[in-house]
Each structure stands twice: as structure tokens, then as C-alpha cells.
Amino acid sequence: MMHFLLLSCEQATLLTEQKMAAGSLSIYRGWQLKFHLKICAACRRFVAQSAAIESVFQKKLTSEETSGEDGGGIHISEEARKRILNGLRGLEF
Image 1 (cartoon, rainbow, N blue to C red):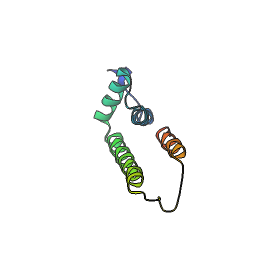
Image 2: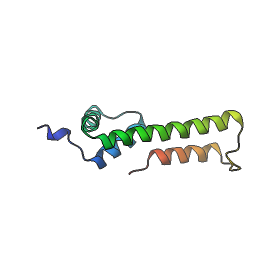
Image 3: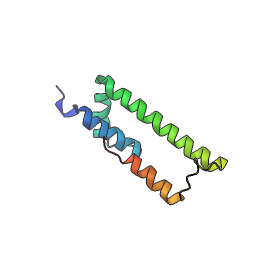
């Protein structure tokens, strides 16, 4: 069997988060993740849920920036907002 392609769900989760944060993975890591996702329904759900959360978060930030909403009374600098986004993208599960 192609044991070099096998990942645990924990490893697949980390690669998913890295891919979301960086935008891509190495060819080898990308193939490992694709192979794992083909055989693991739980990780496919995790990928879909993570993408949905990221999308909602990005839309919320964009709408607040363009509409002038104050985020419920919370005012943070653009630098702080970027640090928060980068921190969320770097979370390990």
C-alpha cells in the first residue's frame, strides 16, 4: 500500500489549516491531503466547515470596512485586525 501517503486525521487537520493560511501546500503534502480527504468523510466535513467559517469571517470584516459598521462598539486598529486574522489562520487543532 502507499503508506507514504497516509495521514492521521490530526495531520490532515494541520495541513488543512496550513493550506488555508498559506494558500497552498507543497506537491507532496497536497497529494497526502487529497488522498486522506478521499477516504475520510470527517476530515472532508472539517475542510468544508473551516472554509465556511473563514468565508463568513472575511465577509464580516469586509462589510464592516466598507459600510463603516463599528463591529458592535469594538474599535481596533487595522494592524490589530491583521494580527487577529493571522493568529486565527495559524491556530493548530
